[in-house]
Image (cartoon, rainbow, N blue to C red; front, side):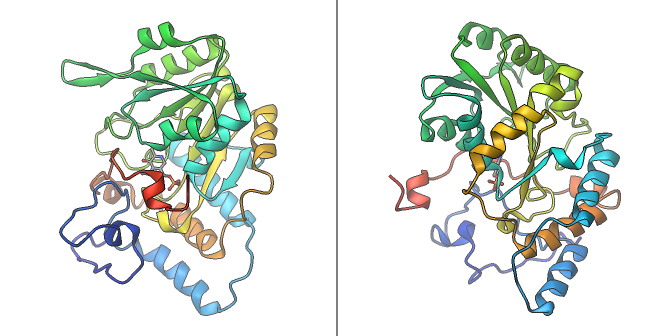
Length: 307
Ligand SMILES: Cc1ncc(COP(=O)(O)O)c(C=O)c1O
């Protein structure tokens, strides 16, 4: 990785660099200005040279690359059937609200948080229960008591940002276990957005929520993507890990007809990232600047035709 080379992104249709004028630093977009790692560029180049850009399907080799990565990095033995491929994590946050709660029901999250956590329940006509995080001795913590006070039988889903954008907290094992316990006791589906988990600055180890207990595996929908750590967000490739068959069916049923298959470039790049990304990139990826951000223009400003 070359973190010193300045890449000129003008004229590349970059959302980050074309939304405002040149004098605005667009820190609300979490993509980085480093060129991606050579194995990923080579995989994309090889595919470009092939010259036929047809529909793709996730090949066995990519499944194995993802499974190998999750096993070596987190000790997580993931069954291929548990993986549901998606064009992004944000669509999945919306899908989770639709799949696991009804129109009169509520979705809880902890604020401040990446705006789509707040938008997803509202876009899907669910009630939002936003519980403010607690700042204690200069460190943010989960508002567990306040969550207990706010939860009702109508609450069906907890949207968990793990690690948390923008609090910058990589939640520790006990904290993750407390969230799982909260969701388990209140019969909530735990949607754990772990998109930033491969990009930690501190020595803290990421603990996937689904791995904290046997119950966690049954109630958790984990969302992951190579887009943050490997800087591939423009390739629109993400996946959910859902071990429980019933939860997986409900999620997939809600997605029917809405999402296209992963694109052929994203399949090639994701495989290179996951195959080559461990263990060699561990130290270099941890030196990347975290790009966590929570303010951004409204959805309607980014997508002017939306209501
Ligand atoms: C916590 C979190 N989830 C999801 C996303 C975006 O995910 P995607 O681009 O896959 O929709 C971001 C982007 O910054 C994020 O910070």
